[in-house]
Image (cartoon, rainbow, N blue to C red; front, side):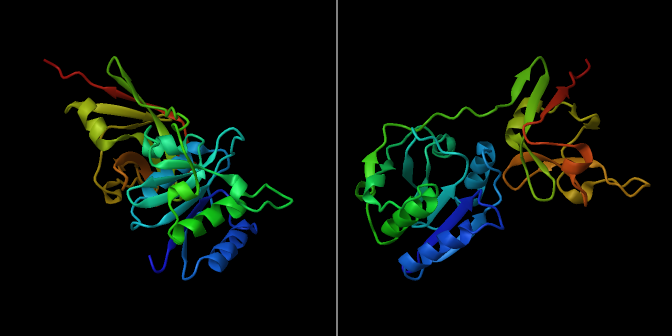
Length: 269
């Protein structure tokens, strides 16, 4: 790629110096590089949020793109790694995120040999000291074997899954976006398969929802001007709870990993 693309997905925040420091190294080391900020607003130690952003924001880039993912605390026993997936490269920590994104097959991944990189007096900013130089190597055409040794496997990741028992579905809020919409951990297809055409009621902190709507414009407006809570389908294909022109997160106190219940009605004979 004549103008390599490097993306950054981090928990560095918008006001610290880390973003500028890393970008300076990338622009200095990689000719004609294009650096794309996916986000620097990931919450530290929130692995599920980092997984969600990586899965839905990084996969649409062209082959040859190099993704630097520096989010959540690293474990000294887990290596820094590079994964080659569908023509793209992902530089990250083997902390559960690779397993969640790429599955259990680690045949196209290597553990970075950190001894190959110059050590500074401080070793607290791995993205600068290791990830940026690795990105420069990949952009110049290096093979995975030039970077480190093959992995035997990824650290397992155990996601919170929907639970369906006795006509009751228990689901969870997996992600809350900037608008306060709460994305759930079940796809619309999965929900429809369980629903099987039956009526249902979803309890959202005391507010009941009984249908899935197509868009925000389907909201009913009360006399007070507040629109009704909506259950719709996000662009990811997962169900989401939304409040048109308001934040469902703030109005109903929703938080990531909140549990919600859906009761399905047995058709009367």
